[in-house]
Length: 158
Image 1 (cartoon, helix red, strand yellow):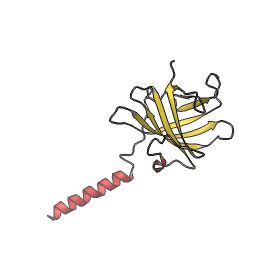
Image 2: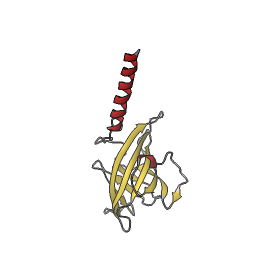
Image 3: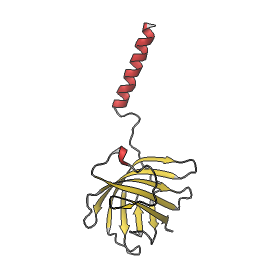
Image 4: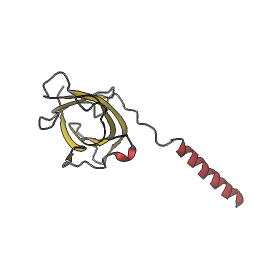
C-alpha cells in the first residue's frame, strides 16, 4: 500500500512540474493557408477593407479602393478551434504599428470565419497588456464601445 501512495504522489509531482514548465499550453503555430488570411470587405464597416497576411501582418484601407493602407499592424494567433458547425475561431493578439494616433494600441480579438470561408466576424477589446483571460468570450454584434467593438466582413474575390 505504501508503494502505491509513493507512486501516486510521484505522479502528481511530475504532473505539476510539467504544468509549471508550460506543457499543454504551447503557442499556436499558424499555417500558410489559415482561413483568416486574405482580403475582407464591407462598405458598412470602418474600415471598409482589411487584409490579413500569412506573415502575421494586417492592413486596413479607407476607402476600400485605395491601394495604400491608412493603418496596419501585427496579429499573433494565440488559439484556433473549429465548432460543431464547421466555423473556425481564432483568439488573436493584435498590435497597431501604424495609423494616426493608435501606434502601439493593443487589442485582443475573438474572430470567426464561417464554414464556407466567406464571412469573417470578430469582437475586439482594447488591453494595456496581453493576457489569455482577456479575450472576448462570445461574438456580440451590438458591441460598439470606445474600448471594444464588432466587425463583419466578406471575402473579396481575388
